[in-house]
Image 1 (cartoon, helix red, strand yellow):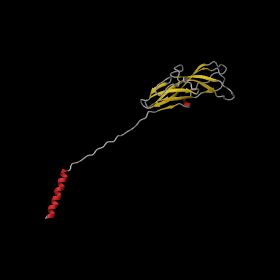
Image 2 (cartoon, one colour):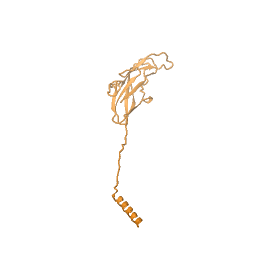
Image 3 (cartoon, rainbow, N blue to C red):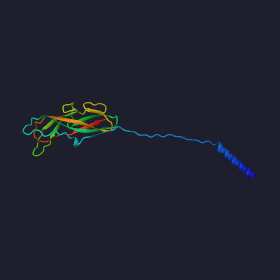
Image 4 (cartoon, one colour):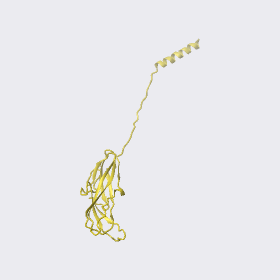
Length: 177
């Protein structure tokens, strides 16, 4: 009988414990994080070369020969950017000089053909390289939206009165953001 009473007491105690036990919850938090850096890319290259055409010959009096092409800039959303153009002579005003390529049979040609880089049109504002990360200077500005922006660049050579040859110059495009 003692065993039976003890077993009943154990069952009663266990039942009481189950009734008195309450559910408990523990919580904690964590974050989902992301950092999005501002970024800009620029595409130029051979597809952006500006062809001023073939001029001269017997009549080398062609003036203000112009051409245009495009560069592409892609900047992240709401990122302000400023584009500068620098001819190989480091002109801050976009006034470049094309060097003679001395294409056979021409040799020893030291002529240099001046040209001007412009924005908006062939006679628009001079486009130089004084743009910074905070100011447009004599460059071009915009605000990114994550999509490619196609930007025209114009070049004009004031004269073609130079030794017949091929002439070229390299322009560096800088996007400050």
